[in-house]
Length: 300
Image (cartoon, rainbow, N blue to C red; front, side, top):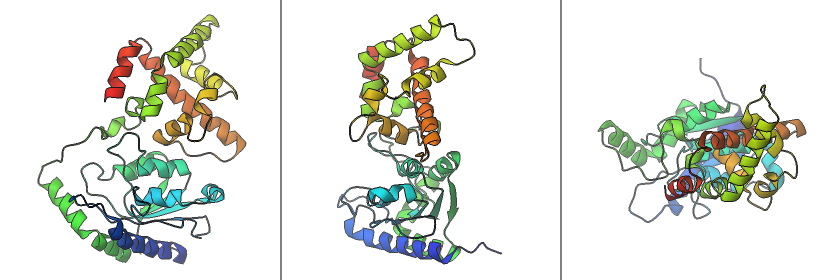
């Protein structure tokens, strides 16, 4: 016996398919084959929160990002389910752009419904796997709606499936990295890399590790010591990373796909976890020549 989705989720699947069909109006005119994708965001009770959801409906973004960006400010915290006709991407050609599966995780939703897996060699289940790694439940559309979603994207699915089956691979651009490297800060957004390879950040980190050593701490790793210190309100790190509109901290959190916290205790844990990842990266690279590291990472 197959699991039957609630009527609200079935309707959302149909709406996402409708958006996918609509996205043909917004396709790039570059001669390449692009997927038709639609996405819908629901609250816990199955009520639709997003007001848009067709790929490139805003002129530039993937369907999931279009839907996320259409949420009213007060609705982001209520987002519970993302319904998308195609597996969320796990790579972007532009390293400045956070891929869809990471954005979905960062939004803090609990589940994702997927119409079809993406057969492109740059995805092929990795987007769904990242959701699973970050403990976001996902499942597929019911069989009939899977078939409908696949039919909307038949040209794209057939092309990418044939390309993969032939053994040929498209040239991977600089934004695509190996599966085990997608959370490595070496490949993070440029604004994050500029900050964490800056002389000011390096100077601050050297002061922190000197303090760590002077205290003779033996029962706490450096990265945890750093995270506790950096996460303190008004710290020299927080004052740089967490100020302004689109912050360095938020770019880092999205790249690492850390779910957005809601309660006060969860927010404190979230901030320490993000700073801990930063501390781990710096500790691994601390003996390298900073300027040379900066040139290499920013030139990648």
